[in-house]
Amino acid sequence: MTPYYSPNFGIKSLIKSAFVRNSEAVLIDFFRDYTRKKYILLTSSCRSALFLSYKGLELSGDVVTSPLTCKVAIDPIVSSGNNPKYIDIEIDSFSMKMDSLAAGITKETKAIQVIHIGGIPSNPSKIRKFCDEIGVFMIEDCAQGFMSFENGLPCGSLGDVSCFSLIKNAYGIGGGVLATDDKEIFLRAKKLNDTFPNLSKSLIVYRIIRNILETNRTRLGGEFLFSKLLRLRNKNKNKKETLLLDTLTKMSSIEKRIAAVQIQQSRKLNGKRVEVALRLNEECTKIGIKSVAFNRDEQILSYTKFYISDPRINSKKDIKRLNELGIEAKHLEQKINSYYQEKLTEEDLINYNNVHDHLLSIPLREDFNQKDINKIIQTLKKVIK
Image (tube, rainbow, N blue to C red; front, side, top):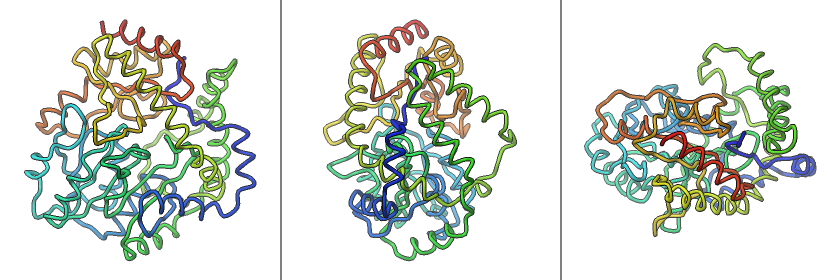
């Protein structure tokens, strides 16, 4: 199997984390410097940070956002008592269309949630200006936007509240970040976050073992051990769908220490990730497939995910087929064996409807060599021929 992702986490990182001091301060200082925002709150996930953002804003109304995202990005809107209102996307960048955005604003609109899907900046400067003009809050969902820039500004620097994941290309085992300049929003979010229960020790141990095994999947026996762990986890896991409010916890001290270690290598690793992504993009172009994630003059992409969209792709069938052929491709969700996410809306959004069922995300690991890239491209070519 050609793995989709690597946490780049091993025994060495785990040992280093045991000697970290003041890990919370390290992370707060990092994100304060990164976002240039005064107040930083560490949370259990980006999803938790988004939920706390809306509770901190004390909103009740419509939140305008993109439907081209994983479902967990929408759960905080609903769970906080707000209503998602979907806007069509630009076909070439997955950003919300600015003309559709303006047309979608009503007197019930309280905020716009900007989603930097796949590490592609979603016009944050334009949307910041627009929000200021109409007087609504701007929430930046940077779960996939960490290390992406537009006009020299990092994604997450322009929102009234910006939320990050400490997993993905921050390479932690868990955790999230809420960043804001508004002290009242911060204090309300922190007060609620402090009421959440602690993460169970068994789940912490599972995450550590999982990330070590996932990092080493390409080594001898690595895929077998990783698959066995997942099967064991799924066997013991309650299959019943759980409400967001029932899953929110505090970020554990172990997660903070590990995140403090991993965040120090995130820039270097992301540089390798971009190099691999550009080579993937070059090979995709050779077989007539245009990747969505491409650099523009004013943007620097982090390539948190590598999306391609092509009329020849049938997401439901082809992602499953790629997995069967040993290429761990995905759709909008990153769950294991989640080959397809149903549409979040059946509204007549032309570009969204044209993209959703012809979209897939191919593997992108920092340690890929040309042989790995060739295998992905040749299998992809075979499937969509």
